Length: 225
Image 1 (tube, helix red, strand yellow):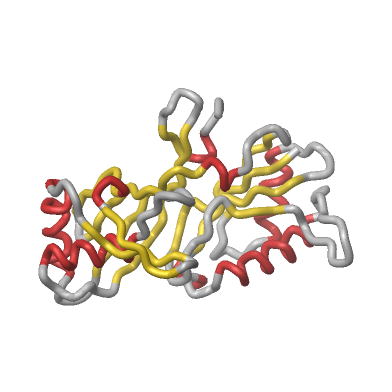
Image 2 (tube, one colour; image 1 turned 180 degrees about the vertical axis):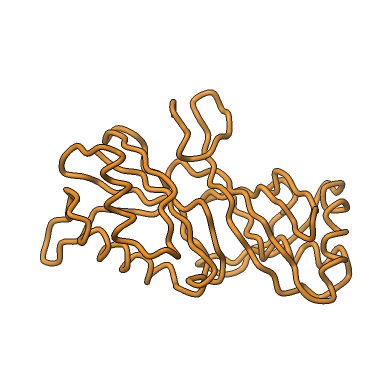
């Protein structure tokens, strides 16, 4: 059995790195008293993975941790144990119990919803450029990869983009092959607006996957995959 834990990352912890988050959750799981499955070898650790790494400086209300259990557990017991083990700035927002045949959470992610709030003098121009971005057939940008920088067409990777109430609301592709990060999107909008890319606050609203019928749905709600 596995538990999928949905949690948030609040602003006070936004500069905690993904590697530090991994270490923190390993220690937290050890404190829960839950029947956590451990790896084999010289240095056993909880068998766990994150659905998607959250970049340093971002906040979120929809992160998913996938943890293998060595015995069945009820959702209520899991949620309570995790709330006691985690600080308020990593709020537990739900749990789901799945069997081992259910695909790994990281394999299910297809895209993510973000709220991106540009700051500074260039912010109004960035917000206004969203309409031009959506109307364009192609908007080129640069994606950084492990092997270097690669030019990409951002337009098909932005599934939706809307400016409202001083922020951009975007649904962006998030797979190993096709990914558009908010900072790359901002750079593209800045190019369209003719301004420097501004500082911004990025908040992840949801991680989404694709079910067996091809419908996009929040990761924790996927049923047939």
